[in-house]
Length: 261
Image 1 (cartoon, rainbow, N blue to C red):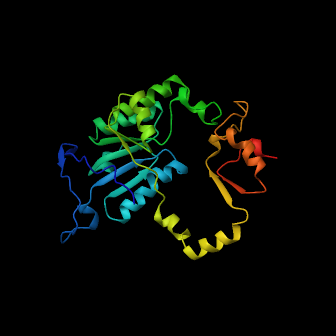
Image 2 (image 1 turned 30 degrees about the vertical axis):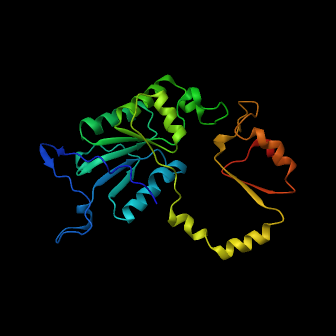
Image 3 (image 1 turned 90 degrees about the vertical axis):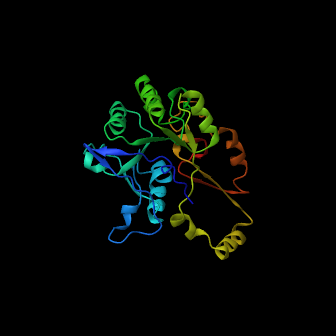
């Protein structure tokens, strides 16, 4: 199940000079109203449509909409038409870093009067990103570093994946309102794989050579050889090589160069 991080704070806002009535969720729709008129409306401004975009934003959005907890929409476009924000009380933005994105957050908060949540699922300050990470260069510029921290502190709240990340950003920024929301796989995706009978068959089939899986993107490996092949998996490379006949090693998302042979 997904936790709704956007619900607690709802405040009055205006559209032009007219006040917008804030509606709270209701278990029963009133006669003559469409289903969404009794639900709060939220927006997501996502960083991408791949890994973290789905885990942290799109799958939660689908579940929250499906269970009628709210009406939520996601986009990567910086929309400035005030009509788009009619009834919106909160916007969750993901991994924003550029100067234009910083200005957009100011527009959302000061002109649209919405509550902002900064979502991040990884370390994004260049000084703490491992040298072997292929995407590190995108976060080493001082302006980018300053933009990220400024936006984190400008937002009303942050959401992160775990307690250690929360503690990290509590130390690195002046943002104190940080909420931990773990990654939950969507039932619409993962439930279809859980069949006890098939699991038993696969267990018996592979019991002589059990499968061990490492799931992680290529950013965990020194694929560009920037750090003398020292990366997240260096300490177990020899153990993997020595047990290829004992275990069936499976890599999903990326493969370390040390195992290319």
